[in-house]
Length: 299
Length: 336
Image 1 (cartoon, helix red, strand yellow):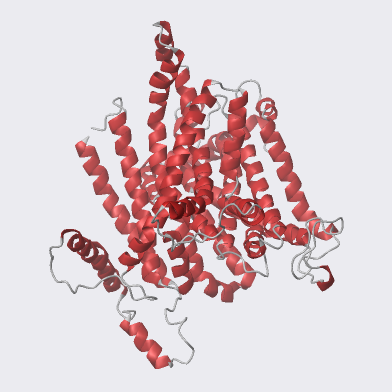
Image 2 (image 1 turned 180 degrees about the horizontal axis):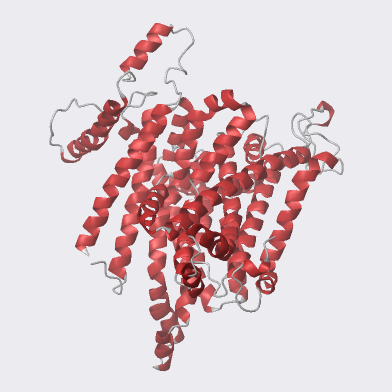
């Protein structure tokens, strides 16, 4: 966790206000729990994902199979644990890349005057892209060549992560540019410049620590966004292949059997929803705790 | 104001040209073969001839300009011809044709658009109608039980992906209760009372799901905007001169709070249309979203290209509308 003093802490303390936001505390806790479950779960759980057992087909929930089994007798709980790894890995990596691009563009635009206008026009241009159709088209067109280059799983992983990051960095860039511009007017920045601090040192010592809170909020909301996008792509059949099912893919496969075993669609969908809900609540709580005026509509 | 509108309009032209070129380039660089889905028995020379006939041998810029000419000059002229009955120019001009069905892309889209517009339009309208009162009352009684419930429901509506909510609703209302059909019957035409009821029954689920999502987003903005206005001096003045409470809230605060929300509503339209891609897939509605997915799967690039570009046009157009609406509605903003 970040050192508390660097989060631009208004009076009464950041943690005090964060802990008062019950939804955020609950969401954050549950998110950590989900992360631990998909990280450690597959090692502890006795059934292996994808292990076929024809004597135990289409079972309902029981102690042995808490989420039931599918038409080949595969344990759904194991599949959900395994799928969660891929889903969350995609979410985290795509979010990190997106925040990195957004923060770089935003801080550069805020700090360097002649870069401001072109970078912001570029941001506007990206905001005008039709994201979902473009994602679908890119994946359809590039999937096969990347698969032959990097292998089935790595190829599609790189493609999806890169595309999500490239189409989602704009909000972060805009918010950070506004923050940096506001910070540049403050006295301590003027003082640091007057004392001869170079621009790079200024960014590292004064700007970055002060915008860290905004970046963390962006990252939390970006995680939710990345997971929802990956699941939507998988749901449309243009995400991960069926032999490496993510939660979205499990949901997509489950919709074929809605009349027979609706649980196959419900459980993965519930996990996606829960993760997104937790991330959104955590992001909301962090934002409210960082900004005492606490409003949702601010962009 | 007029000069501002013209300037914004002029700026959107290079944006659209850039986006159309980017889309064109993206598809062009990709290792995609429109003859890949044809039967294996077709010999390689014939395939090469087919590709040649589709114009794939020409240089990149020539193909892009040809597409621009077909899309920006020929198609509008055709449209004008259909509309007025007069003929403009050469009636045999080249059109943007689908590779899969050999039909003009514009006609394919025109065929699919009504279904999408009905479902999406109704749900957006319904969403706005729910969101505004909820947002106003939540802000008026901030931290009250209604506010907490409203915030919770809007958080859920905002976080539950439509593809999951759609599946849940189908399991409950179509599979278990058997109230509504799970698959949208697109051949249904409304001729009388019975078919109208059938049409309504099959529209309820998709419309409700999209409406819930829209209402969740808009009510969050409405609430935030109301909260900002409720503590202004003019509200105290209105109360002091004896205006009734509903009048203060609705005629003074809500009216001012609507300004930013109108732009949010305008900006949301393209997103909602893109969201229909997923909803149409769940309920098997044959709208433009379904057309996009099926064209992507069959590698029908002209259709995909046109649809993607249309989505970009919608985004730019509604951004423009939102800016202009804001200037018209709020006299404090002057662009000149």
